[in-house]
Image 1: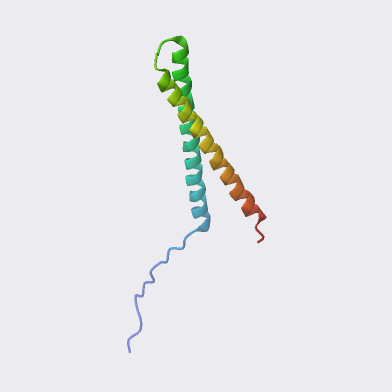
Image 2: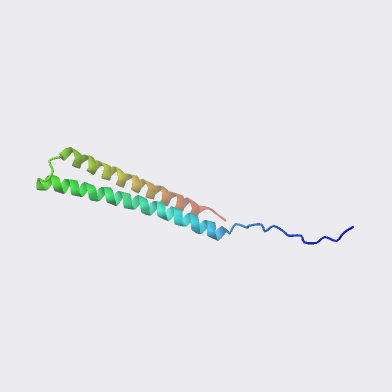
Amino acid sequence: MQPIQDIQLSTIQTTDKKSETNQAEQNFGKMLSGLVGDVQQQQQSADQAMQQVHTGNAKNLHGAMIAMEQADISIRFMVQVRNKAMDAYQEIMRMQV
C-alpha cells in the first residue's frame, strides 16, 4: 500500500449571503430608479408638448394629449408599484420569526 500524496482538495465556493443580499438590493434599487427616471422623462416631454401647444409653436394638440396620457399612466403605474412594495414590506414586518 502506498501513502497518499499530493491530494488537492477542490475549494468549494460558499455563497456569501450578504453579497447576494447586497446585489439584490442594488438591482432592485436600480430598477426603481429607472422607473422613476422614465416617469420623470415622460412627464417632462408631456410638459414640453403642452407648452409648445400653448405658445403656438406646435399645432399638434393630439400629440400633446397623447404625451400627457402616457405620463398619467406612467405615474399611476409607479404609484401601484409603490403600493405593492409597501404592502409586501408590511406583510414581511408582520411575520413572526
